[in-house]
Structure formats: structure tokens, C-alpha cells
Image (spheres, rainbow, N blue to C red):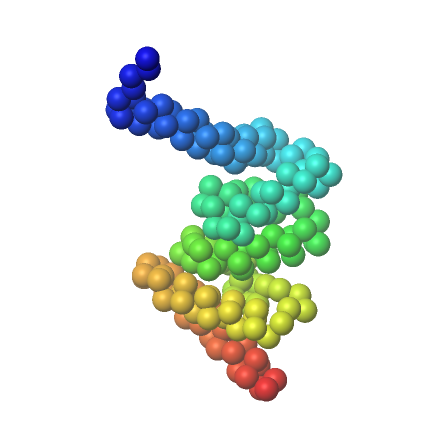
Length: 167
């Protein structure tokens, strides 16, 4: 007859959880390793095999490791892809406002960052982004970013007036 105590069950479950977490992180880690090995080749091949879109998805979600790759991505993308990168950075502002604001003006202009980063979306989506962005900017406490934060708030206030004028 099998006699298993709760501690054994706990350790077995813990092992399974840690293995699955490692596998989840390995996707991100592999992307970063592949990118760092040769950014130019990664981007060229990544457009074809979807890894570039994965990389953008991690930036958009606010993954700090991927946001920090932005300065190394820009030199290898064309104008359209650069626009896409700006869009995901504007969306990442909602998750990591201090990190993304810190990229102004070297990696992105304030007008590109502090905008509604959607094309032909509903007014509800635009309002939602605006609200979330204003809320994210309130979390910025770094005094070195105060000027950029103020400039960004001005941009969003202008956008808010434009949205309100449409009604």
C-alpha cells in the first residue's frame, strides 16, 4: 500500500511548478539570447518567422528586459517597423512609465510616445488608453523625469480636448 505524506506531495508539485516556470521563461530568454547574438540577423529573420512580432509583444506588455533592447533594435528597422516600435512603446508607457519616459528624446519623441497608439479604433478604446496613460504618469516619481512627464501630460491634455470636441 502506498503511503505518501503531504510534504512529499508538496515537493512534487513544487518541482512541477518550477519546471513549467522555467519553460515559460525560456521563450523570453531564448528570444533575448537570439537577439543579442546578432540583432541585425535576428530582425531580418524575425520578420519572416514571427519572432520580431513576439519581441514587440513583450515590449508592449511592459517587459523591462525587452524595453531595454529598444536602442539596439532601432538601427536595424525600416520606417514602417520603426513606427510599429513607437506604437508598442506608447502602449508600454501604461506598464512601465518611468522606463519608457527615460527613452525620450534619444529613442522616441514625446509626441510619438504620448499619443493614442491605435489606428482607427473606437472612441471608447481611445478614452480607455488616455485614462490609463494619465494614471500611469501619476506613478512617475523620478524628479529627473518631471519635465518629460509634464510634456507628456500636455500632449494627453491636447488629445483629451480633441476627443471631447468630437462629441
